[in-house]
Length: 65
Image (cartoon, rainbow, N blue to C red; front, side, top):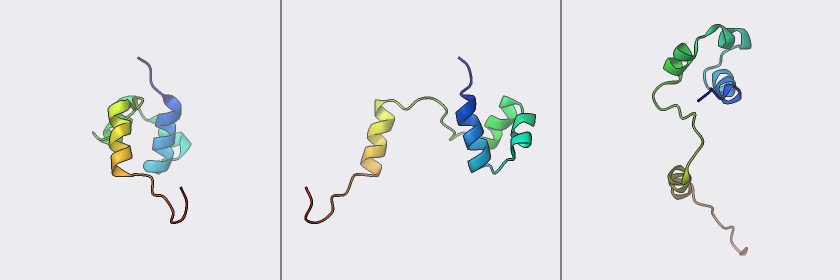
């Protein structure tokens, strides 16, 4: 399985505040260590989606169906 470089770059730039040259200087192992054990780089499955839906349910505005 390959790396999702676009997702890794997004996480590196936004979550870690890295500059592009800093990101590309890291090895994948270094990047994963920086992101920590909670980093999820795999596509979300039904269980993950259900957990998000339960944690952040849609709220209906008053007077709207």
